[in-house]
Amino acid sequence: MSNHAYESAARLRPHRCAPTPLSDLARDFALTPARREDGVVDAVEGLEVSGVSVDSGDVVAGELFTALPGFKTHGAAYAPEAVAAGAVAVLTDPDGAAMVHANCPGTPVLTHPDPRAVVGPLAAAVYHHPAERLLTTAVTGTNGKTTTSYFLDAMLTAHWGACMIAGTVQLRVGDIAVESPRTTVEAPVLQRMLALAVEEGVGAASLEASSHAIVLHRLDGMVVDVAGFTNLQRDHLDFHKTMPEYLDAKARLFTPEHARRAVICVDDEWGAQLAERIAVAGQVPVDRVRAYAAPGGRDAAGADWWVSDAAVSMTDSATTFTLHGPDGQAIAASCPLPGLVNVQNAALALVMAIRAGVPAETAVAALATAHNIPGRMQRISQRDGVRGTCIVDFAHTPDAMELTLRAVRQITPGRLIVVFGSDGDRDRGKRPMLGEVCARLADVLVVTDENPRSEDPQSIRDAILAGVRKVRPDLHDVEEITTWRGDAVRRGVELCGPQDTVIVTGKGHEPFLEIADEFIRYNDAPVMREAVLDKWGEPA
Image 1 (cartoon, rainbow, N blue to C red):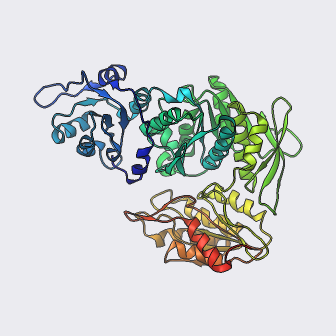
Image 2: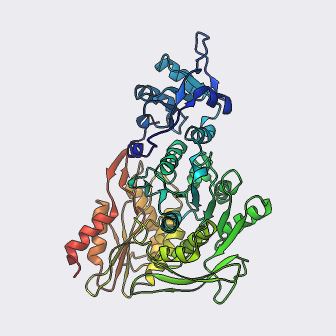
Image 3: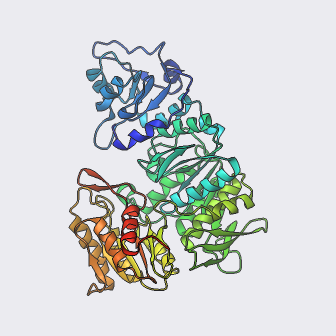
């Protein structure tokens, strides 16, 4: 398949990779040389590959191109582009083989009934199993993956000297960092990043694992040392259909095929169910973490680790807390982001780091400095008597919005202003729910567009406003911006006084607006920064 966002990821591949005989891969992964219309079977003897790619625009000479069946088009349609770039051979399914034979005469084709299921282990073999030479962590859950993975990045770096990161915001190995096309990249991209990390002497990797990636086998072929779970909230039900199915997808990460140890937040019913499922299976050791513990001691959920004494500082927007462990230890920590939701992320990261071998004191010191994560409670301006506080955040589900607005309320002496919208071509049921949450918890609402995609933007805003009207029938202190998202961000800053906070939610780090079939370069942070400078100038 071809994806414009993968172009920047092409740099993240090892400089040297000992080639692997294609016949060995055929034998080890039950790949069948394809038979052409004239009855001749494609020959693979004597051929070698030095890499794997699923993106035709990302192939370099000597690699195997894996043409996967997609949701809209078959990857085999892009085989000519891959072959022109130097692909040695093509791996695809039987339907794809006929397309490759028709369009790429002379190119050897290997088939597998489910190439997506085999490409991860195959890529791991081609890149010589790099994950086995790194300390690896992976975080899954609806919300908090990115924040937790960046907290882990800071902790792992403090102990191992360097950490690779692959998640929603960026792909980074050493000094090379590029925008990420999705939360979890395709398996060959992940495997070659890990191989580059080994080559560069990086000691650890902090990964995000989306439910889509788990189901679509992007993490197959590696076993992470510690896997963590944040929470499960309403999202992606256009893909998973029901919350139990959504949990089942997440649960696949916490099996011996994918993880050596599990750390699970049990603050919600889904986390508690997952921890119990892992414990009953008895194949992966599990630590239960509870961030929303009852004051003064162990919570009734029976957590192994729990938090007490969480307190938010209005001055520096940080949150202090104590993490209690199973051996009676009490670890005093400071999270550089406000709110209990970030205490949950911080506590999960601390336990994961400790279970990964990072000394507690090293992890705590690193956590305190891990601030300004792109699009995650990212402060554009801080209250100083003249300016208000301006924040960009990724909250885009009803539960995340509620937790985010409650967190920001704790650091807001004046009005809380929220600028928000909702995605097109995604779960429509959450739109009125978002409107209702914002109308209940914020003082001023500015409703705008997020990523309309193929839908009419007005219909999305109307659904949000229907939820708002359940709380505010007269739409008091509610504005609808129908022109451009940037206008809504600027309006939020215009409304913000010295004691107020304005938070722009929904897109966070995202570098594009998706409107119809266009990807328009856009990010909330620089737009808000410009609006802040126009209103207040540079800080004193």
